[in-house]
Image (cartoon, rainbow, N blue to C red):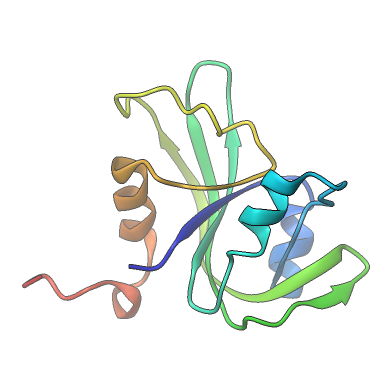
Length: 130
C-alpha cells in the first residue's frame, strides 16, 4: 500500500493552485528529514488542520506525481495532482493523534487512512474484491 502523509494547511491554497506540495524546512532535525525523504511517486498526501478538540479537518487530498523535487517560491516541492478538495471532519478515531499537530507526518491510523482513501476518486481506489 502507498504511504499517506498529512501536511499542515499553511500555504495550502498555494499548494493547490500550483499543483505541488512543499516540504517544511527540516532545520537540521533528522526526524523530519526521514519523513520528508520517504515521500514518493504515487503516495497520497492530504492537507489537514487539527483542533484541540481532537478533530482532524481534511482540506484536500492529492497523489504525488514524481520522486524528484523542484524548487519553488514556496520551497522544495513535489508535483501533486489534487484529486479532492473540501472539508471532511474526522473525530472519534479511538486514539489520540499525537502527531496531528506536526507540520508533516506519516499517517498510520487505519481509520484515518480509510477515510482519506474514501475521498479519492474511484480510479485511485483498490478493487472491492481485495
